[in-house]
Image (tube, rainbow over all chains, first blue to last red; front, side):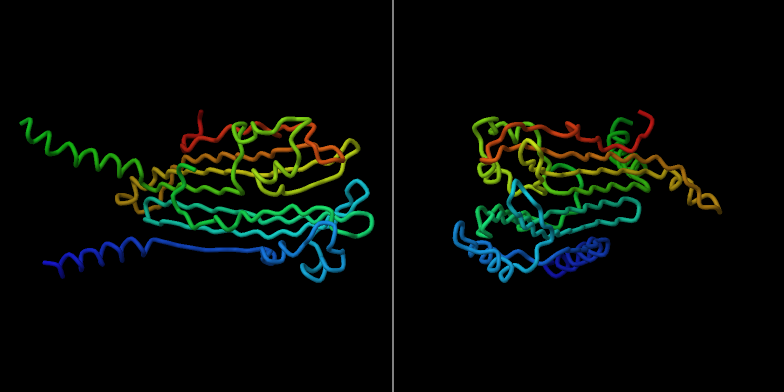
Length: 128
Length: 142
């Protein structure tokens, strides 16, 4: 009886999994939390920032200061394809890091967040 | 007679649901987490700093300079697309591949902007479009 149930479960799972698709795309290098933690306000210099993170993706002049912006995008798509009824969901999130340097080239402020950590594969398009 | 109807009811209902879902596609694309007015009530112009905003909402997507201060922008969108092809109903009985498609796309593109002074204190905050979340139905004539 148990083996019959297992076969049915396997059969149902096989049918369901057949109509699934997962894909992923990323843009930019990962901004590591350790690297962000190494940036110290009032201490770290522009050269050290460049050594730790490389050249910024964008360089912004801001009120007489320089802002280095680093970003990374992560996209995860999931689809449930049941031939006559298809559900798909693509979620994109970004990690952003702004390093604000004062006129002397010293880090004045660091603004960072990692949104991609909570990014999951989803196919159900309803709800949040 | 009543028992036959009660037995048939789930089958008929199931068939109707299947017919309604024939050739149906529902797609959603979202970029970052959508923000609403309820998410930014903690911001008090003249008091709240950018650091406090970042602590709650994360880093903005862009920071630009303006004549009156610094503008931080949070961008997000929530695109919903649904499509039903009623041509599927005729497929078993016709040699051609008929299509009768109803589809609808809702582009929920918005941004939240805050203007800060040189000390990073928020002076103004506002949504760009006051996003109304688009509906999830394929009927385009409404």
